[in-house]
Image 1 (spheres, rainbow, N blue to C red):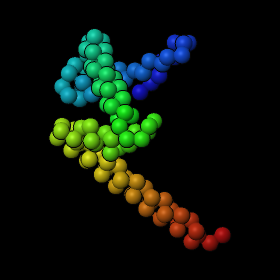
Image 2: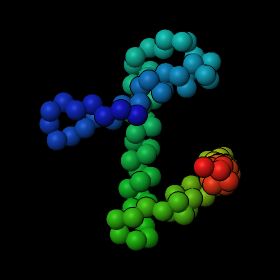
Image 3: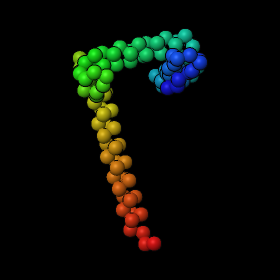
Image 4: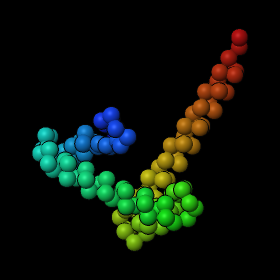
Length: 113
């Protein structure tokens, strides 16, 4: 995701590059039409805006939690399942990274100086 700064106070977020790669990964042409990429980008940004606005209206003021997002997508079983899967994967990666860092610390600590 990149921010394009046109010199004014508003920033346009563009995900065109990532969307092109995803479209190709799902079987589209390696160089999809710019209008197609732009349309999908608009749809994605609108969805993200709506979800985050709804999530910010729930719960604590000015704070969005994972539970708020899970609550909003609870009826969409595919999205809900995917989010849960990604959260579990994220926890596993954090645990593995922490264990790896602890192993390195123990190894460095044991090396005689």
